[in-house]
Image (cartoon, rainbow, N blue to C red):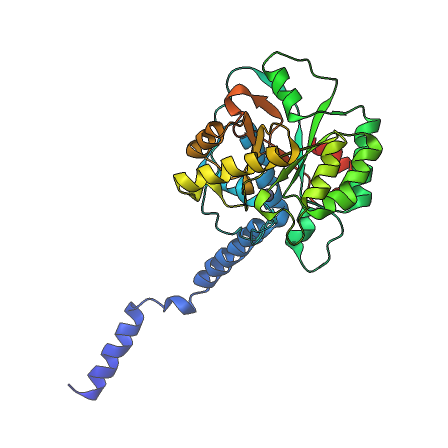
Length: 332
Ligand SMILES: [Zn+2]
């Protein structure tokens, strides 16, 4: 092919071919618009306020007894106990929870008594430990919360009184509330108990009986001393705090029967209540708890209404560290 002709063909080809996309100003306008829109979308999604309100609305749905597995998982993650990796109800991805929380449908008679729960009443020895921060209410703030309850006319009652009212065998006082403490830490004796006594408030402490007298846990002497005042009721929280729904039938039986027997032997009183470690349970666990002779059990899903149908997984309200008094008042 002669050179001239080749050149002409090339020039013609250039005319016919559209401009390469990358050189087209229209392309860049559209590209920039898409880029900016995506940037805005990412900002909106990662904003904590957005997640905060989303979480609150999912909690509300849970309180209304309409559940999806993911909502239930989220609740389990947000309201765990001391040994989970993270309990922060923040925008950061929550840790995997192996066992989903199952909530029985509300049915039968009902009463409305907020059951609140605490873990540590003490200063966090390690400020870098954010999980511990979330689970620790400092004694001064705890005192202020009880002062608020007293001045607002709340009447702390026991789970047995709530149960009697639910069965129509007793009437409730005005503004009833139930105070519960999980895990049997020694700070319950050192910090919480003197403040509860100051206000004459009843409370329930859920004890993993296999851990009594070890590490940071209460010993039997302290438990007996508090029990003798009649102010504190000690109830079961398994032997050593496993997630109950993952246990074999035999182990499930051991983790429910033994703590009841141990507390009853030590205190000479009937133990009626069980609290699920991490708030985790399912139908099989409820049956095991029933078979072991308990009359009910508490979970950690949010809500303030107890029904006959939910007796083996009652809702409770978490009181995390650092709540202001108005926040505390709003929560209950
Ligand atoms: Zn616990």
